[in-house]
Image (tube, rainbow, N blue to C red):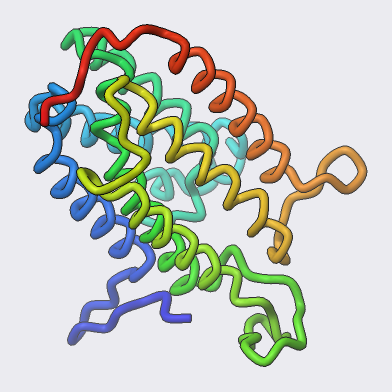
Length: 250
């Protein structure tokens, strides 16, 4: 665990820095390949940053709505940089809504835009795994395996390392221009990437020690991954049956 990076008198939160680095690297990779999908790099940047800012604001607002007493007692915490004061679900929904509104106003092709954003998501997933490792979050279940790590008073599966390795492998498979995931049909690239990511989450969640349980023992993340996987497979089946109307630029 290395939650803070000490640079002189400054203590910078390393998990947040890793996430920001992942977004920057992902956007740099996506910018190079944006034309392949017929999307302007400027639109891609604006869409990404608008979604990011909206997601952060929405995550903080959702947390304030969930725990109004805590924020009323300390209103300054609304401006806190503490990521623990962000509601993940509220942030994701807000980011998606902002992205949809921006895309509609700019008349961006829906599936082609998702294809163009796929490298951003692939790099970001890798950064998220490293961020969990630095923060000690998303920790593993107790384990006696030789590669178990000491964390929170017990030897545990290095679930954060598993997450990073899986995300790195998916990133290699989803690398623009050299991937079997790429298709001439818009949307196929994004959906195949999402299927792989959902499948990885189904497998990796079994090693987590902090999973949220619902309905008498089901892991909520695995339930969500099953739903995402089913939805992506249905969308893939639908898109693959359609005739090819638009081909990405080569």
